[in-house]
Image (cartoon, rainbow, N blue to C red; front, top):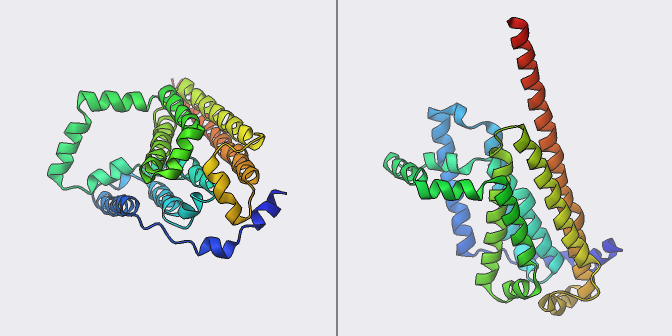
Length: 289
């Protein structure tokens, strides 16, 4: 049924949509790419062990995902069809964000700055206020609560419709989704100091998949459209308002929540490998003594 719904969209018209060459989007993407490329070259020349090849590949994959989500025809289509908007948000939160975090952009981009600017930035970064704020925002429980709250709050009909009517509100919505997703993945991937933290990371990923899936299910089984603006626009693409919303809900419910569950399984496998390595090292030490 859903496949027949998607087929009603003229893909020739969809691909023909203009790319979103908005300075507020293209500018930061270009600057980020230049800084990362320059920082990577300097690190390879002076401290090759500071970052591995997989970090760079992850960053560029995440950067390209941002281009697809925010610059390609996905962006203008997201303003016409709710399900495309949902695809855009899932690209930002479940694909671009973790890839960018693995890329370690702060570490790399800092090396792109002149030495005097690096020193100034490091002093600012290590100031008490900045460190306390960062430590709080990337504490796993806090990051999990913040990211989950942002997802639910921005899907309130009044706020979501406001984002469709105002470019400024739309930009704020994307910043909120991507920004809290970056904090969430940073907290889970790099703020683990012991086995209990790793175990809780699995719980946070699993529960995020559950509550986002629940939100998607609510959209799918709703008896009326949630967003009047999309209800007016979907017909031009061959969708009824409910078809558009149901497909968006399914995207959030199934592939969206599955992404978090896959990440939870990956983290569990990594945790088990690390536990085995620690046990082997402890066993070797006992034998040696």
